[in-house]
Length: 250
Image 1 (cartoon, rainbow, N blue to C red):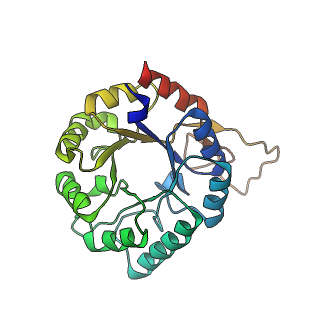
Image 2 (image 1 turned 90 degrees about the vertical axis):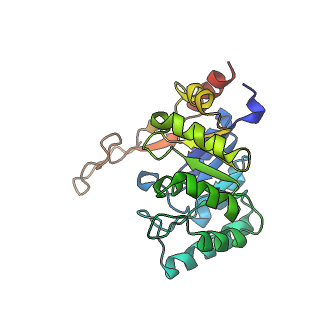
Image 3 (image 1 turned 135 degrees about the vertical axis):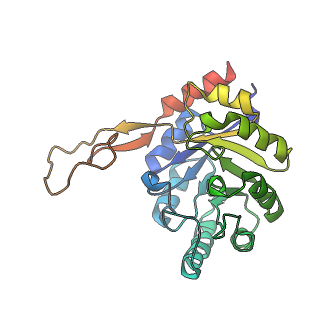
């Protein structure tokens, strides 16, 4: 498998993760805040600092809140302003998406957001997986002007939907990049790519980093996320990305 033809996109939640992703050999970064909530728009400071410390293409997600992908006019104003501000910083593109109440891609809104990006390539994030019909949403994404679709095939993990992702790749027929994401690790990445024919894979590829705090307080209960205690946090693991690249190239 040729390294130059496969994109490894790291979903990073902070600047240290961007640096780790570069050291590990990732191709580019989708930069988010609030990864535990599916990712929201990162702050201006986070994006500006990431661009200073990391040489990989930085693609911020444009998502004003967690939850569904049906947005109010006020939320749309926020999204448009975030695109304007972050575009001026020199980002490489954006990851975004919006749906109608019936689960179709909101073509009108997506066109507005894409126009605001002034020619930068745009990824349709996993709002795609919540569409009523992935096949219809794919055709809408092509018509609207997205460059890439991030998908797990409509299930929580891409590994559970390999046949459907392969069919999406076949339907796309080179008109749009199909990027598999969710549940991809060094152990299964090669199988995912070979089984689906995707040209890109996406993941956090993270490890838990233990807090250096010695003091703890009863004012904060244990985290609701059982895998990450309240004071600890997750950061991209360069070794995980490097290991995955080796498995893909072997």
